Image (tube, rainbow, N blue to C red; front, side, top):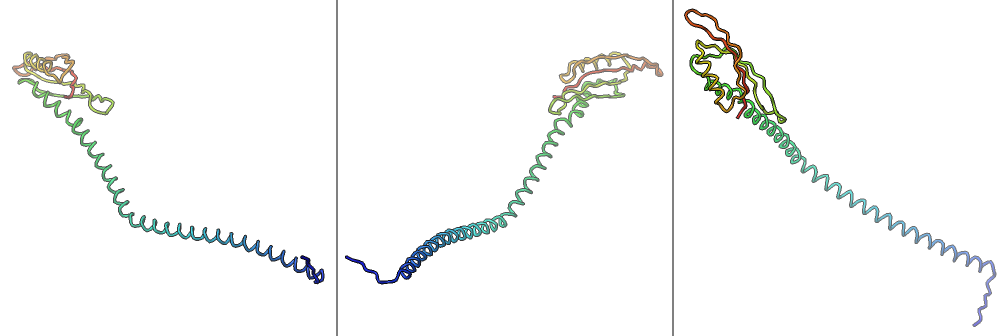
Length: 189
C-alpha cells in the first residue's frame, strides 16, 4: 500500500504540532487530575479529622464535670488521709503522757507526793515516742515511803534506770520533811 500525501508540508507540520500539543495537554490534564484526586482525598481526610476532633471535644466537655468531681474527691481523700495520719499519731504519741501519769500514780504510795515533774522526750525514726526521760521532785514524811516508791518503780515494766538523787531533810513542825529527786526512763507500751 502506498501512501500519498498531497497536503503541503506546512499543514503536515502544523498537524504534527497540534497532535504534540494535544499529547502535552492530555499529559498535563492527567497530572492535574492526579493532583486533584490527591488534594480531594486530603481534604476529605481533613474533614474527617475535624469531625472526630469536634466529637472528642464534645465528649470531653461532657466529661468535665466528672473530671472536676474526681479531682475534688481526690483532694478530699488526701485531706482525710492526712487527718487519719494525724489522729493515729495523736493516739500513739498523744496518749503517752497520760499513760505516764497513770503508771506513775499507780506506783506512788501513800505518804509521798509529787512536787515537780520534768520530762525529755526521745523519738524514733518514724517520729513515734521511743522513751521519756523523767525527773521527779517529791516530798515525804518518812524514808519507808520513799523506799516503797522506788521499789514500785523498779517492779513496773514501764520504768527503767530508776535512780534516787539527793535526799534533803527539813524540820517542819513535829515532822521531818524529806525532799528527794528520782530519775527514770519511761518506755511507752
